[in-house]
Length: 484
Image (cartoon, rainbow, N blue to C red; front, side, top):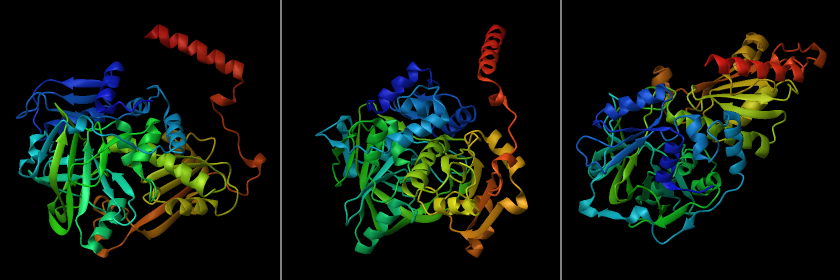
């Protein structure tokens, strides 16, 4: 597996016919957003815009990098036909082997440089994605890199950044996220927080940046794990941070404690415009380095299913599996899947080997909620291991036939909202009353006290003898081929 950078990945998408080039002139004001929304809704191709109004033809914009599971598989070097279950398993296996980044002296991201008064964020095509967005957002798919001022722990995440002017953007910092933890330390020290933003990187870098890894994990090491070799990094020009050497665009600067500007609203990942206009921290850009003929990247957020939901459903599934099975050793848990319609992290389905003891559902759910990755799971559905947890048809069947609502549904009120975004979509009164969200456990398994002979057999294709199944498959494949 080679980290070929964004351009190498785009070449791969052309090879698999997973990308479309948009040569017709488009405007950054809503038109790119509308076209992107449409390709997401149709599960269509990734898009490379080459004719952007007001910009030279050498300045391109790319979106939809991994907005389908096929392209996610390609990003990991897998066959595009790889099943969702196997993509999750591959992610899960790879992150067991972190690979530290490799520092190099220079890289393509250093080909051009703007410093001080020459800095101009407006040089690059940046969309206003949704009609009610507060402005143009350069930070929707950029990897934001910060460092703990006391321990040196490097964090990389994806956070929204609305352009204020040529030299500054908003920085959406949530206290519960790792960037919020870093920023709180800089505030106590009364020092500006150095920040680097890498835009247009190899997809494994973005996938790692979106992962909800525990404290003290450097996501660049996890990008190495997902790519199966070190990510090559170079030192920044003006801050003590390192970025992927093949980044298309790198922003460097500081977030000053106490300095804020109005930011928002923004069509967020939950499918609603969240947060309204609020005072939020400001990212002052001191330097921009970029490749010749740079390719800016970004993604549209909004009602599922969009790119973010595809990414998070896989990462959250694999990381929750590691937390519950490998780290906590919760009895009976065999598989976990988050669903992109939830969106991404609010509904999780967990398969178990039987129902080993009364209260097992609450043991499983409470363990999940105690992890960083599982803290945002509002709906926890638990099923027997014969259910394909990636198939919502099977999950709903189990819910309708194995769950007794007055016995098997538990509602736990007043949990916290991880990102501070959900109440505005679900219940505005929560904000006024300063209440948290409720959590729900839906146990869709046969009761713990059932004997094996009391569990009814399932009537489906798998109960037929193997030789009969093989013949049925062969005959149907032939008939379908003839009819096409």
